[in-house]
Structures are given as structure tokens and as C-alpha cells.
Image (cartoon, rainbow over the protein chains, first blue to last red):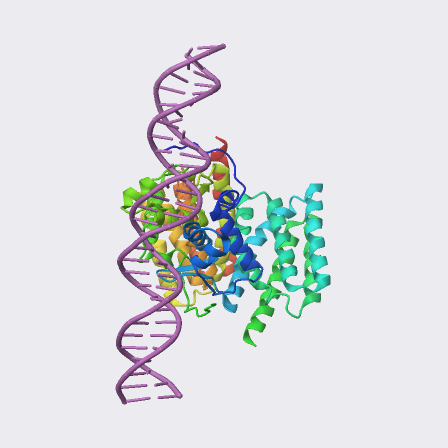
Length: 231
Length: 231
DNA sequence: CCAGACAATTTTGCATACAAAATCGAATCA
DNA sequence: TGATTCGATTTTGTATGCAAAATTGTCTGG
């Protein structure tokens, strides 16, 4: 019975592989989009039948999508009580940032070492421009999103598949989105200054100073968040 | 419609919440156990109907379980072609270890800072004894499992929910198990010496030296794995 | 007016049914 | 022999049905 042939390298999230064709995939996408766009609130209950009607499918693929998202950590499944959008307290968001710092540092370090490749420089410059652009508009969610994409790019450049794999996952996107409520806060100017510095260090190709700069930025953000959390 | 009450702190993986009662939960558990125990090979195809028969349930909960595990990264779902146990090449396992180092370093750092609490010392000492015990038996899988549990314990002590949450996820457990094939290799003696050193540094309460010791251990493991991968 | 019990309704969890797609295997042809 | 086609079989993906659990709303007694 066991069939062991496995084709080749997949650089996609596990979910991506099911996305293309199936209804499950489209429901997963829709729900994730809905969460990102703020259409579903944290802690909101998701009723399978409602979603099924909304997307014009039966409950079976909806339930499968919800289980997939539960595996991802975007929704929370409670026995006999269905699915809810996962809810993160301020404290949890702080811990999440502390946690993602650890991962991003690796991306910063590895990507900095690849700045001798002009294509990488161009890609990361482009991602940085998006940061500047959203900063000009002072749009918190877009700003955090641009920062997120900047790190996606770093992780891609790093060449470590897991960095990419992990950072693209829906629950990371979801949790990251939640940071928009806290992160830039009233510190727009310092925020962009920090990132200009980080970006310059990355371009310089000096991995050590990149990591230092990035880490101290995150620690500054964490201090701000903790202060906000207390008030 | 939106009902926002969410109870309290869950320190469990998302899957745990569905585990207790439901069939989906028991199927998820069985599959994960099967993978850990080596009953399912990497890349092996999982046929929903077979699993359903095996566990005496219908295909519906089996499919939901497979989607959940796909979300967690343990299985791979391909449209119209079902589920397979995810397969990692040696290169991918190397990148995975490089990636998890980043996470574990945070755990090591934070937990070291909590060694003034006798309960933490006791807990981590106990976890370390399990490492020594499995080392005495020279049982690669148990050894890697004990190391895994040691870091679980560090992450718990660290107090960062995400460290704990993330590190306990099935796919980490899954990948960690895969390392058993490579990691200890012919280096049993050096391996335990390294961990004795790491453990001592952690107990000392000096976070900086703990991190350095741990990182250089991982780099040593990575060198070994790269050498093995080439031969 | 509020707390608690209870019945009606909603919602979940699981099983089953069936069409479409993929897989397997035998027969065919070069 | 080895590759290829084509039909039979397996397997997937989705819809539907139904019992059990949870939720909601109403009524009752204090």
C-alpha cells in the first residue's frame, strides 16, 4: 500500500499546496483574507453553516478549512463548540514580538551576507521603499504590513527554506497584523529612523552590525509596548 | 452574532484543544504517534479510507484530522492526490536545525535568567537526567527526544508562551525526530559533553555564556550534518 | 427585579452517498 | 523487451442527513 515516491522541492506553505484548485483552499484563503482585512474580529465565533452559505459550498470543505486553520493557529477549535478566531492579549502580542525577533535576527544575519548579489540589493531596496511609502501615509496597518514584507524578503534572500516557510504562514501574518494596534503607536519618527539604519547596515553587508541594529530596534519597540500595556 | 468571550490562558498547542473528546483529535494523535514511532515513513501516502477503517471511524473526521496536520506541517496535501507524510531532505533538515537554533537560543537565554527559582532548577535538572539516561543506552531517537524535552522545559521556564506554543507543535516534534537519523551519528561522546556544558552554564545563571555555549554546540552539529550529507 | 429551570432552536460532529479525478494493470503495438 | 493506450478500480472531493450537544429565550418562583 505504501507509495513512497515524492516529487521535488516545494517552497510553499503546506496550505498553498491545497489552495489552487479545491474549495477547502479557497475557503482558507477567504477566511485568512477576512481576518487580515479586519472583517472577522479576534475571538469571533465562526459558524460552519454560515460560512458555507457565504461561500456557496457545503459544510464539509468549510470544516476542513477550519481544521487546517486550527492547525495553523489562526482559529481555535473547542470540542462541540466550534471555531473562533484566535484572540491574543496585549501580553501575548508582546511575547509574540519577542519570539519573532529571534527568527528575524537569523533572516537579517543570513540575508546581510548575501548583499554582494545585486538582485538581492534591488529586491530589498524595493521592499524598503514600500516601508517609506506607507510611513509617509502614517497608516499603521500598511506600515506593519510593509515591515512584514521587508522581512519576508530578507528571509527569502537568506536562502533558508524554513525561515521563508515559517514566516509566510497564515498565523504569523495574522499575529503580525495584530501588532499594528500597538507597534508604531506615537513613535512614527523613531520607527522609520530605526529602519533606515537597519536597512543601511544590511546593505553594508556587515552581518554583525545588522543584527545589533535590528535587535536594539526590537528591544525599543518592546519597551514601548510594555509601557503602553501598563497604561 | 459576534461572541467575544474567551476564557483564559491556554498553554496547549491548538490541536490539544480539540484532542480530548473528538474523533478528529484521536485521529490526529494516532497519526502523530505513528510518525514519531516510525510506523509511517516520510513521503508515505495516507489514504483516508484506510485510516478510517483502521481507527474505526468514517472518512469525515479522518479528512479533518489530515487538514489539521497539514496546517501543522506534518502532512502535505496535494489537490486531488491526498495526503502524504511530509518529507525532508538532508539539506532541509540542516536548514531546519539552523532555524530552530534561533528559537532555542531565546529559550536558553530567557530560562537562564530564571535559574534563581529553585523549582526551575529542579525541573531542568530532571530533564537533563533524562538526557544522560538515554545517552547511557545510546538510543538515538530517545536521545533526541530527551533533548527535545529539555528544550521544551527551557521554553516553559522562559515564560514566553509562544516559545512554548511553537516548540510543542507536532511539526517541530516531527522534524526533531527526523534529526535522530543524523544528529548523534558517531559523536555520542562529544554530544553529551556539549550538553553537560550547556546545562552547567544554564544553571550558573549567566545568560550570555549559556547562549554562546549552546550556539557553538549547534554549529558543531551543523558541521557534522553537512559532512554527513556530503559523504 | 433577578436567578434558575426547561423547552425550542441552533450548531456541531460524524456517517454516508456519489461524481470526478487519479491510479493501476492488462492488452496492444513498435 | 519496452513504451503506450485504455478500461477497471481506487481514491478523492463535496454534498447531504441525522443524532447529540450547546445555545438561546421564556417562564417560573423567590
